[in-house]
Length: 262
Image (tube, rainbow, N blue to C red; front, side, top):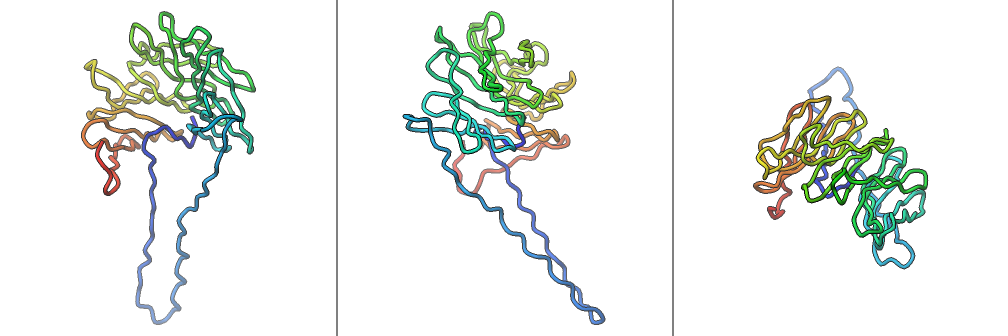
């Protein structure tokens, strides 16, 4: 799992300020005030497009500044100022959604028969992550630094969460964990996503070492987790706000002022 991720979910930013107290002191010189903290500076960089493509979209980034996404109709990797076309699994389009610290890239691609399959791109090779038996399509959502990939399979039987091991073995996570959707995982094997106990509404959930924890009784999903076990997600009910789950406590993140409700 990347330390930094962009998945269309909420981006959480905190600014902490320290206020120095003043005391009346006559026998000692006043202490020098702490230097003011400067706000972080950001620089927007145009990552460019594949030759002949009119657009590009970034979907994931790691701490090595590898960025993945799509340009035109192909999955791409931006690395060291270069754009790399990751190709397809035989179909007309592909898209990359996540990249690990090892440089493994995951996403999905159309295959020759017209369906979609998840993939992992490793050391220049695009590897097909086939759907579960009986399902027609598969999609990857995240990869960790051990090479474990999570996503889902789609077919006439509905949607099933899937874990693909580094050796290519596919595990039905819905059957193993009760999670209906898995959006992310960390390097310890914690899985986050949602459960659907009533068959209709999804609720944000965490699975770890055989234990399933529902994070809220408000409809929504957990979208990302870091290696400290901190989870972010969003609600689909009410105003559509986001949340952070940390140390067993969920904190709702209100909408910015003047933002329309979902």
